[in-house]
Every structure is written in C-alpha cells, then in structure tokens.
Image (cartoon, rainbow, N blue to C red; front, side):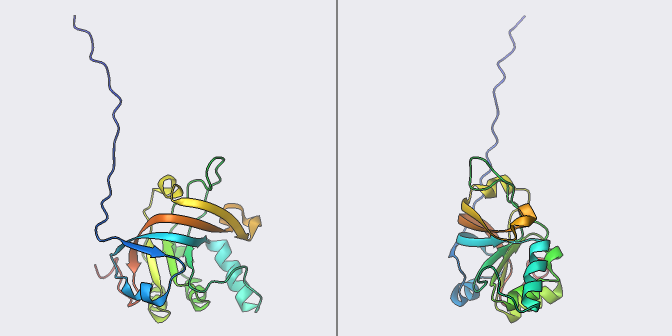
Length: 194
C-alpha cells in the first residue's frame, strides 16, 4: 500500500488591482470632489468619522435645537459604520452598513458641511439630488471586508455620544482606505447610470 501524500495547507490570495486609483487626503475640498467620477477607485487617507442611525438622529436634533455640534463637519467624511472593539489594534472589524438607513438624515448632514459619505448600497433620489446640490460625494466601501478594512485604521477615538457604544461617533485616522465613487458631485450614480 502506498503512503498517503501529505496534505498541504492551501492559501488563497486575493489580489485587487486598482488601476488609475486616486489617492485622496481628507478633509475633502472642492477641487478633489469635482475631479471624481462615479466608478472611480480611490484610497482615502486622513480622518473620517463614523456615524450610524442613532448618531445621525442626535446630530440632527442638535442642529434643530441650534446647539453646538461635537465636531466641525466642514469638508469631513462620514462613514456608516459601527466598529467593533479590539485589544491589539486601534479598532476591530469596521465594515460599512447599509446607507439607505441614513437617507432621512443625509440632506441635513450635507447642509452642515459634510462633503463625503461612505457606506454600501443604493441611495434615494433625494439623497442623490442633495449630494449634487451640496457638491459632495458618496463612496462605496467593500461589503464583507470589515476585518480587512480595520487594518487601514491607524488610530481611533470616540468624539461624541460614547453612551451609544459601537454606534458612538469615532474619529478614525485611515491610510489607503479603499473605496469606489458611488455618486459623484454631478449626481452620476453607479447603481443607476453605470
């Protein structure tokens, strides 16, 4: 009888080739935003802020009550994410959540000066029109890649609503965070036009 061949551990390597990738430094400015087109691939570096449903609700309530916001939204990027904690890294898994849940709040957030949004999935016509009106941009982050995306976070700190736990607003310092332009400042939408 012949001996069984030794089983070898197989490794799967995924290579994502981003051709003509745009390197973007935050906060966003008009020149950068106007150069982006729906479908463009980009790597973000700098500060981005997490915010999900409850954080959006609180920001809008502060605005309606004419109270000071916990951070200046001008030119900033809001990432629809509720990050997990980590013991040995700045943050745990931090994948995007469904953007449509933030649609009721997005026009107000953009009116406060936010210029970028990161999430996953389609946006409403109202949001697309608001992005165009405020000359902003919607980025799509890779879904199901929260552990990978966490490796792009170099520093994290809670800046508002700590009582919300993972849904608090975090300021993340990112390096080469991969995104695709979902809706550009002209209103072109990868889910509708491409």
